[in-house]
Length: 405
Image (cartoon, rainbow, N blue to C red):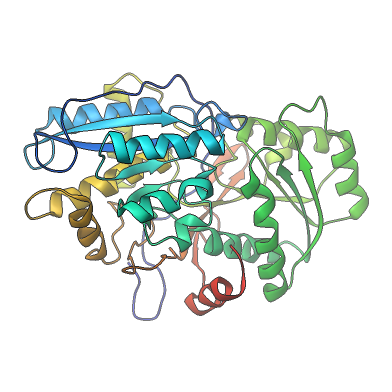
């Protein structure tokens, strides 16, 4: 929760990894999702077989396990939940078509746990239809600016602010290698520059990297030549690790500060990863002191699925749990409007530790200000000091007014 002096008293959460996905099955139904039948229909969309698909490993399987578990325990308010999953493949046109199908043909009452990195292309569609987008990946501008979105993790502006605050503790210059496949990777640079100026860090070098590149010699050398003190490699986990190892071999010894979802168990025994700091939207799978995380891990174990889910899977699961919490609070039929009213009623909701404090602003985009910090030390995930942080609300509101993100 947020105390009177603004300090966030919640669970300490450390590094999380982001990994790949499998095949997607979209289900049809004879029942309507408008609250008039025995099924509550919800949709999900993600870039599950895109060039950045390693960010979403296990997501579909975890969502299916969640759906089965909810229904095995009586559903929600006595009604079964039907989850329809779409894979946009990272293609904006495909995503637009699929979101229209979910809303217009399938009549879903909400889009839940989305992990589409082209959500900027379709965000206006649920907004116009009055359909809430509940939780999921909160890394793109719609999560913070579109009133139809109800983020279940740290939003882009506070996350970027937190990244630069952590960077500041290691140096005054930063270099970023960012994914060439997803537009949000490049768009984030403006946030790093802006918040960097505020806290005293210069973004000195920024270059794109492709997942399919045969090597990263030139990018690594550019980082070395720039003499930056801190480096971020903002791409999917396996690719980021490959780049980190290549640059380390070439002699790069700058401090690594990474988005939490890019650091997985595979990083633990790599010399290049020792001392890395990570910024997280939601808790990682291995922080099992969190009640909500223990529930998720048991669900995975019961379904004989991997108990080391990546960040994308955790984003979607947290969104599904946020939907469930809202739906259970509805007095009467579960409709889109009823879900939104239940979400607006939430104050500093953490979903048993799965999320930073969640409070939503009616008819306006919502910033989730708090984030988590993790580290790797001596080949193990560790909790650094400080272990959590929150961006100042006035700084984020000003950034909303003056930036396009």
